[in-house]
Amino acid sequence: MMIETERLRLRPFTEDDAADVYEYLHEPAVNCFASMKLDSLDEAKEAMKQRAEDAEYYFAIELKESGKIIGEIFGCPEGHEHSEDDNTADTFSPCWMLNLDYSGRGYAFEAARAYFDYLFNEKGMRRIYAYTEDYNLPSQHLCEKLGMRREGMYMEFISFVNEPDGTPHYENTMEYAILKKEWRL
Ligand SMILES: CC(C)(COP(=O)(O)OP(=O)(O)OC[C@H]1O[C@@H](n2cnc3c(N)ncnc32)[C@H](O)[C@@H]1OP(=O)(O)O)[C@@H](O)C(=O)NCCC(=O)NCCS
Image (cartoon, rainbow, N blue to C red; front, side):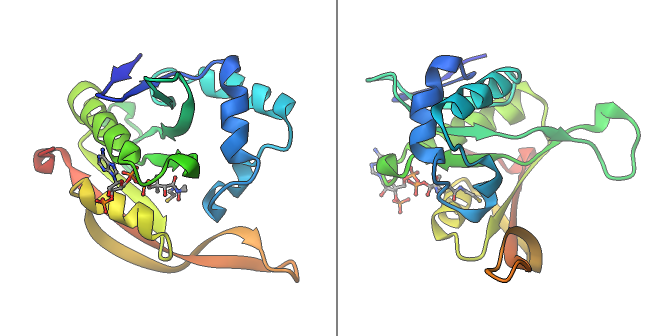
């Protein structure tokens, strides 16, 4: 699967993308991606193989003009909480991440808008929601630009990293969401 926008290609990962991904994931920009940290190029190559297995929802964000991978967007469909029927998997929570050398140029919005279009119009999603921490203003801004509504704030919701004394460092998390019938972009 490949999605084209004016300046970008969203496409499945290949092993050749390892160096570009290592560039932004040897030090993840935010705690929520701490577990995705890559410590070597070899580790990055292994990670690319895993990403490549999900060609339906896990996309590299490639700059058309240079072929460089400048980030990624991914997630998986979720069913309804109390249903055992797989056909109810119409809810989706995307994650997005740019190489911060390429932020502030509208690439995240361009990629996310195309991804939402794909999820709503080709994959039959009904609701898209995103979690973002209370201090992550760029991600909140992106949610708002995409027309998502802030639906909640969960205090000390999750811990991605530990405090220096080894106890969990809890984060306050906001939830944004948009329904297919609200999608206008
Ligand atoms: C969250 C994240 C993806 C947002 O990226 P971003 O660079 O702020 O978003 P964009 O690429 O859409 O750039 C937005 C800005 O580019 C600017 N811009 C420059 N050229 C542009 C163009 N041609 N078209 C549109 N916008 C353009 C705009 O001013 C826009 O700012 P505005 O919306 O205030 O007008 C990025 O900060 C990131 O990867 N962070 C680390 C990982 C992370 O936090 N992920 C989310 C976890 S919840």
